[in-house]
Image (cartoon, rainbow, N blue to C red; front, side, top):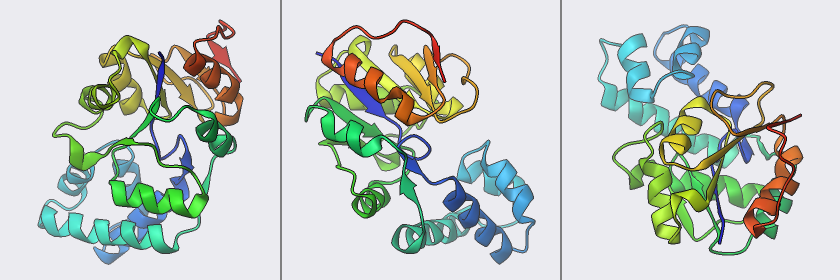
Length: 215
């Protein structure tokens, strides 16, 4: 049996503009340059971002303010599921797929409810593991909860840290929603829509085209 493990933001949900706005608002609240803060946030965890852009401020208070803004965005932000996400998730067998996110479960559920996407039985979020991506722990935890061997799992990701996590977990990793392949991916698709047929073929155990890159 084959299994599919999905990243969420940037893979199934288009939240790029939302994250940019959340960080912009946070930066303005703290008297910092929004563009500079966002560029740092793209490459680091929130706590690392605070250490670099606001070293004189309490990181716990910084994180609390960021979390409040993110929760507000779940309730009122404008975002959407990527084309193909609803069709893809609806076609997968229950118990054969999971979500693995660096976000928190309540936000994922809120966004999925607003975009009409189904939530699987297994959802591994930031609170479920001590080590986040690029550690392999989140993907290995999801596989264990599904009863899956790592070699039977396909990871679908858009971010370098997630790709590294999947590779370190010993899984097949496909990249989506990026103009060029993220280093290390076994296959690359420019959009999620372009990957739907092949992901479903993997999940069913059927052969799919062997080309490493698909536009």
